[in-house]
Length: 592
Image (cartoon, rainbow, N blue to C red; front, top):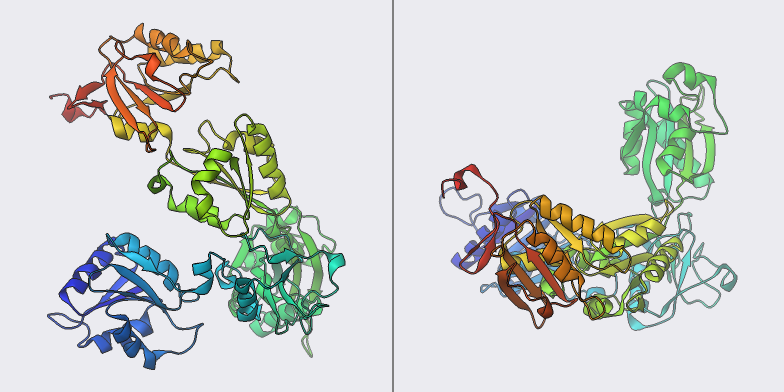
């Protein structure tokens, strides 16, 4: 919950704007007036600081500092605090930039208030370097020291015991091979040269004063228990199993068990103490998981020969490794009531297929920006890479190529993901529309994670400039016959013409392909009148943008090239005030 505190009329107006934009996520703390919940600004800030995860103060930074100073507890517990000035020009992340979420909140506030700009002074954010505490992973050890070394350009060894797709790190962070070091940040945490180390590991090492450890989400613990098993017994068993195997509890993502034990208090409480969710599986799913130690007892009790081992393996998915076989608890003076096993998931690389939109920076989606910042490897057409190069993190590897190398780019992106990297494969518009998603996903198998990031297509960008030509059913057809036989393209154009669909033509005309567009327009003309509205948009949302609303009979193919999108209306499309409009077909429109 985000607490909102203001002291002036201007602040209250901005506060109310945020409250209206985020109705489910904000709580207003009034500072007097009818129905006020707090009498003074100090009382409002004090309550909000105690009750909310984050806080936006529409106050001067100095005033806010004085108000929150007596309330500060610690970095891990304090809420993030953002200050907004009287004129709403700046949203300043004042406290808890990373741990408290103030940096993200400052950006969100700036987006919600017109003309406002975020002010973030955290060193890693200012330098474009991912903060070790912002990667969504537990991190321990010398986090501040290693972060400072990364920022200062000092050599930092990256040692990975787990394949984990990390964002781009600066060039001074060099991946170490097993032969290059005998130290992995274990007890003492010092390498052979006493340098700084960033360790990615689920092993229970004790980091020293120059080692930071990122704990990857690699482990799942399967648990079985008799009815009434004490939580202390279950929790002690899990803790001892991890300790004996040299595994970190911070890498455990879940406790897993059979559905019949979903309400078993001892298991529920053990998951709570470990700080992970409890995940359950039907007995019939667990029964088909091959395990090394099946037993008749759980088969008779809950319908599966294995609970602990099968649940751990199933939670970790394909390729899981059983690192701790089934073991029983060891209470004094009575029979064991709990079993557990630990599995390790095989982490995979990550391929994000990112649509950059039609070209304008403000049509690049926030999700696409996030994926570009997350990527350690970016693959794309050279001219598309140039559009977003400034958004990449320092140290990101860029693999670019020219026109005609689509297959090569797809294979490269998949190969880099299989090597364990976080890869962004970029394309214009939406990457799934006449772009790189199709060839890349044809290459990608189930051994990598794939994320699709939608983008604004050229057809949509052009339609917005033309008016509302896509108001009813429509189709997009590429006129490029480099990979698709013209006979197939012609058949599709005829079908669209006969079906009275609005048609958008991609790749309409080039120097070597100058007859396809006239032929396609002639096919449409067999079913549509010459006065049917048509639109020609060149460089939609880019420099040199040009929009023309004309008719099917008057459209000049000579004005069209590969940077152009051509849209031809259906028999209901009309021109209104110079804009193309295709009626949706609502009943209330029939009388107009």
